[in-house]
Amino acid sequence: MLSKEDQRRFDQITRQLRESDPAFFKRLDHRVRARRGRYLMLLTILLWASLPAMTVVAGRLAGAICAVVLVANAAIMWRFRRRWT
Image (cartoon, rainbow, N blue to C red):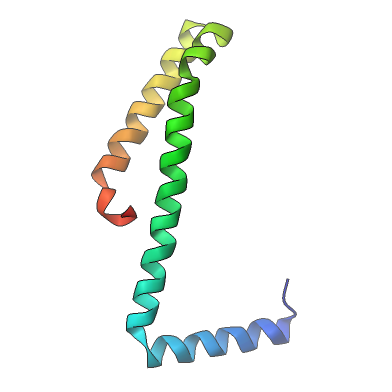
């Protein structure tokens, strides 16, 4: 955690940099979104891999609910795939 003074100074530096070099901020923002997308993809793969075990342990209804949620997740990821790559 930054102190209030340090946070204020950091915000000021960030604002000045954003105004002076917008291309840099655009590239930086793209990298953050790409990293977030990779984590979301990894989480989706892990959940798909654990689906059979969840179905056995928690029952067919829980497995079906999990599968529906994962299909919706995959559809959303497919729809907005340009944002994460």
